[in-house]
Image 1 (cartoon, rainbow, N blue to C red):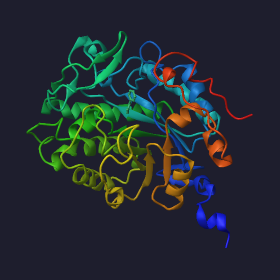
Image 2 (tube, helix red, strand yellow):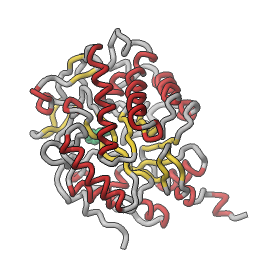
Image 3 (cartoon, helix red, strand yellow):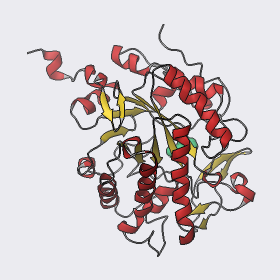
Image 4 (tube, helix red, strand yellow):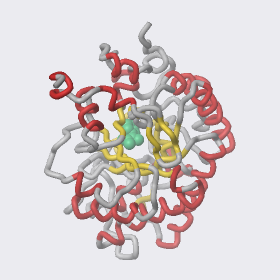
Length: 367
Ligand code: 8OZ
């Protein structure tokens, strides 16, 4: 018996092609969605953005950064949108550049809900949320870091139009050349605000018990899948995160039921942030296998994975795909580096949010 095989799973596990819904991927290494705040005026993607994503086209799948579905969906400066003609045309440059390099790219559909500031909202109005509860959280605007603004509660009558703005954004993403979309249901943004009982105090069909709090997530995914196909629709969830001042009294029950409802839609993949976003992987006990059980699509995991953990996770079958954020930001050829066990460039947090090419398109590949 080969001892090295017996003691450690083989890196080849990460390079087995597979189907992710309707999308065929050549490896299991995914570029996680990363907010970089480098859109141009009108929140329009640029040639520089196209270069950045094309440099990373060897990913099994690129998940493009969180992108607002509507003007109200914006919460930070210079994040891209997918609701205007100029934005769709800008994204076409990105998808064409990635496809020309042989890659695959989906768009993360984002509504920040209450994690916003009046200066970013149409006519300076308050941001919208499930309930009028201000988050203890910050955002960044033209003047720098500021507290988020107090939101107003969405009226029940406004929810059909909200869901339709997700559907329209998915149609726009398809027109822009994306291979699919990932609905952002994580990290304390609008859908997550509806899921959790700390931020959702509604007494109508979208608040109260778990059935009602999972309704918006379900209906958004149903509308998006109906527009572009379930095999091109995915969701990101973060059951244990407290990002955006979010919390729930019973995350295991909540997310078991959320995944059970989503399972009926036959989505392409579920993307799970394990633990606190960009923080502790096990802040409290959580049975991810139990949550996964009803779901038949691809299972993607994220948060602090290194090479050995990723190989073990995929080789064991606990996950089909592993998403890397900061490592992909700093290593445009991350799949090759993982395959060869090469050293990794270190990401520089000073250039994460905003700026130009520095810390964006100037990380070197091997050779
Ligand atoms: C970092 C800064 C701003 C937004 C997320 C979209 O956490 C984000 C985000 C991350 O999902």
